[in-house]
Length: 199
Image (cartoon, rainbow, N blue to C red; front, side, top):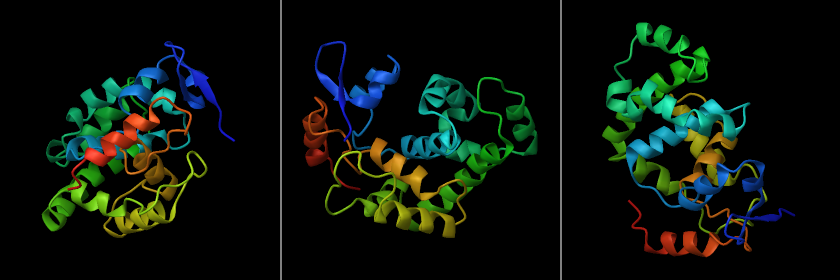
């Protein structure tokens, strides 16, 4: 069973916060709060794909570098990146220099534009995969919904969006409240989810 760890204020947080101090602000201010902003949703999908095989600490530490490298994840601009941009990014020591993942971000930006044309927004599309009932906190790394969303994204040509990557995205963007029952943030996230207007 997942355990809690006390934060700087002495209140219990999800145990993974205890790995490094910089996890506390991310946990308290971002992780699990519902998001309907397409640019933020796109950014998170991209960062989760970069995390594949690495630690979230590595990605979080480089997040501002990623934002600079990929035009703040403005998918309209990223969709216009060329092979010259790929080569430029492969020289950027501030990000993860993985050709396949860099090319996937550019590809996915183009697929995002297609998706918005058909579905109205990224938010409207992904929130259709919110589970009807919330799972036991931190009990799984994929779900029926993340498998279905991953499959649909792949069908539409997206890359590096496997079920585990997509489930991490769903946890972070508030489609799933995966904060432990004892965690001080769980009730706050639940309240935010109740007030959230689904797109």
